[in-house]
Image 1 (tube, rainbow, N blue to C red):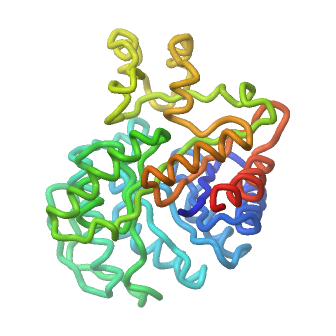
Image 2: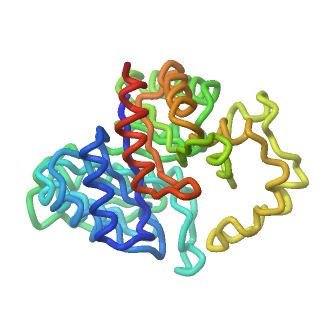
Length: 331
């Protein structure tokens, strides 16, 4: 099981560099940067992180096939791989941020992810490609340099069955957001492994990764302010965690750019059980027990997006998770 870090470009690049260095010093295997509009540009940040680290894997978590053409993604990830000395890793998903502002039609997302992976991999192999998919097109083009590695790992982020099926059939791993309950991890792994078998792949070859907002406090109750918005779950209803339909309908049309504001009226419905099922929050001991349960349920890795508890910093969350919690998890 690996510990990985997710950074959002909402801080100065110098701060992102320091956080990546802390991750490398404290047992994290990978540092991801969100390709989120309209924060600091993801590949510019990743290039800087590559220059100031030496061991951690680096990549976007996640880029999408709509706002950035997959051929440009192939160019960017190959460049990052060269800069970092072979440490690039590509995270790709359907995306959500900035589409309204950019006037982008996000159609057939699972199909777009599949086509993007096929095109990126062909370009990384040095091929000249003619590609006409249902969503993606590329006309007799190739990269004008030789990538350091033709087989950069590709991870698909998806909470939906179609995207997860694409990951099972094509990718090296699959990332699910807010998959913080053991029941959900087991259901997630079963679905991916089943799809992999149908595709003729070894199901154990696809890594199962859960992406969790993470907060650690000396007082566990002080950490439990995290919430969740529009997410799919296979087991929430069975666990008695589904919110009322009328409550969900009240935020169905909320714009992504509005952040958490539209969801604030739902906060009275959110209990500690919801927090535990969708996030990683609590004391060092509570978070340790939670991660052990996720590992035993079948998670191969955790991507932590660190959030500062009251009176603490994001940097402290990164260090505490890596130096205090993680050694206990590994035993």
